[in-house]
Length: 207
DNA sequence: TAGTTACC
DNA sequence: CTCT
Image 1 (cartoon, rainbow, N blue to C red):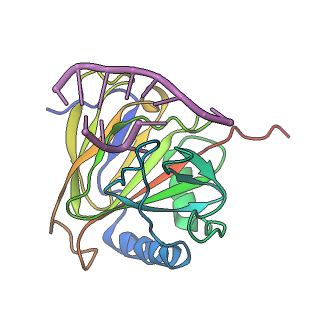
Image 2: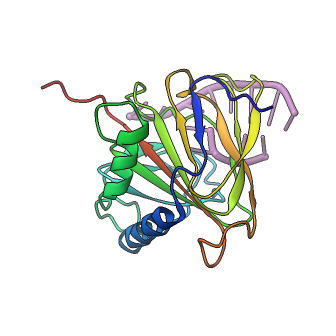
């Protein structure tokens, strides 16, 4: 039987099919305002296989010249990111156990051959807040390990409507997507997978 | 495959 | 550097 590393919560089917459809419509609206683009790796300029955009006050971006960072503007259009849909803010309140709202929602689109290498989310200044991830569309094989690359990893399947929370000891866990399973969901007409990642970037301002 | 190193 |  599968045992997840501590601090990693997998909540299968948290979003019902109707909620997935509603959320998808909102993400389509985000993508109309802030188009998906192909990010590139720092220094090498190698394109990733995933296409990205963001919503929220800040968005995670990467390019050859300036590397991984958060910024307030879409790198192609130069416009501010659209707001995070209210139902994602509500989901954050439901699962994050954190008293301040997320500032960034990274939207990752995985075509059927896309993947994401093992990595840590460590570009945020606030590491107290968890990372909350929502899956839509085709299933994927998700892999998660410990806080060093050499630690053992476990793999499990994520389906549309599943939510994963990386918090506490899991906040800096290495994780990635090894493959997408084509045609395992009918949510997206043309297949593929969307992952939404909610993050708090800055420590909350003292009042 | 096991796992590095920047830049600001 | 979320790749090789």
